[in-house]
Image (cartoon, rainbow, N blue to C red; front, side, top):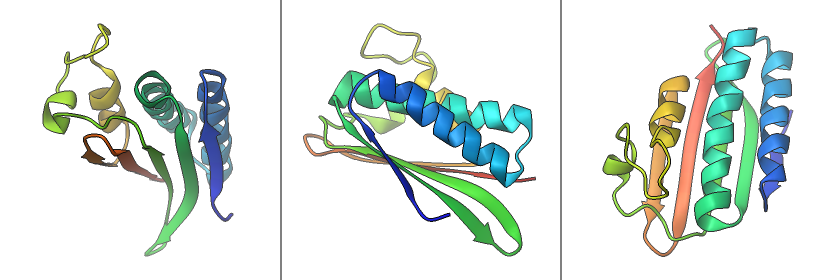
Length: 132
């Protein structure tokens, strides 16, 4: 598989993104629990794009490294950025009045999670999950 690109424009794209990564993770051999973990992380991240930036892009690709298989998901936007990424990754922190579980929860569900953000320029989140 090459790259799969899914534009994020509205709340319906949350479902499309979730379904796409769930299907790919199933095809790669991830078990049901990991499929749900990946799909849940994507739901949270794409929801943040819709809520805070309005639109963005999700790029998904298969990883192969040293005989291991994984999935890599990049979610990027050109929104306002995250003022304090370290604080945003703390459980309970929210700027929207929610539970503050989105970013920290997504990070816990994946094997690798990196946030690159610049105020006024946007956010790019790179996350990976490896087949065990």
